[in-house]
Image (cartoon, rainbow, N blue to C red; front, side, top):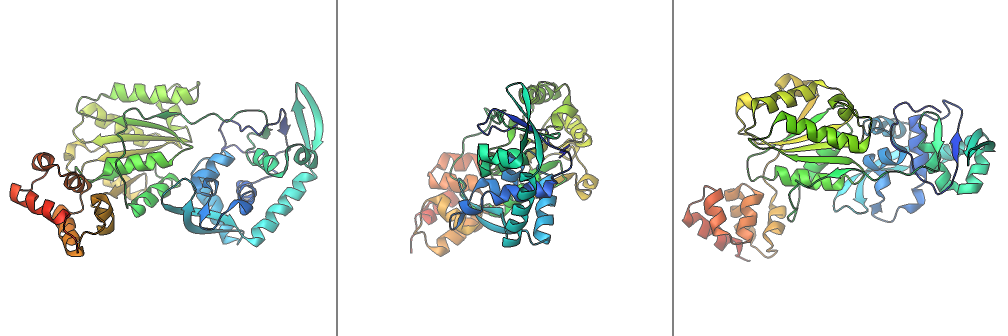
Length: 396
């Protein structure tokens, strides 16, 4: 039962023993199917557990996020699982989730039945004893036994290790204001994590919410190791490298260089406000594109960034190494909620969204009646600001 792609720490199942199974008994698809079968009875109407999302599957099984899309695609093609969009426990938006079908459940039960009759070498308290899969289930119970087996690593099923908590370096991340809409953008970011692309660039003009979008997405990645780094004109390549290496060594002590860092399959790096940066920083990001690895990078960048400051080229977008996501204004209903006036007239709301182009920063300033901020940070004249403030309070 080999799993060369799995390099995660082991999971605790509450038992003080460790299994060693024969190689090549379980494929990634089989492991995903067994994992999903554990949650068939846990689904409440209209809400699914996080373990049924792509991120949840990757974390629970201990495989790279990029391996999950291929596995679930194969399962859905064979009619063993189905993909749907639903509410996820602990999240305020709908997400893609996966559930086993009746055929999938029968297949999972067949796989587990074969494993029950298989022979394992069990190391416990320094001793090695033979144990069948049925003995393991008797000792742990069905769900915990499946949880242990599907996380097999290098032919070893660990049952007494502990899953480490994800490393979060978020001190530089901004606080979250109220967040509405952006369902499509968030879905695109989820799909990016499961793609072969290594970098996603959130392109938006100042005030359109690229940073807030990145922050919202970062908050949703509970099981990922995540580093947030704010960029500025004074940022140096040395500072970036030091931050990434320090972060990587907190995850794995053996990390010695940037390729090692980018090889961390559960890591996400967010670099915020790529705009006017030094030449060494441009070269640093350009070099990251050339390094292969499972880690994902999200860069928020201003569309008005000078041409000489861009670290990637059209060819890299066309090849799929870099993905671009343009961040525009929010939709009318999201603007209504952000303004905090559910009774605002449709005509007034339409004019507000048109004039502000759905820019969240301007809408928040209107909500807070921040005339000074509007004068400083927008191109509106004093007369236009007064008119917008009147529209904000206009009801049917």
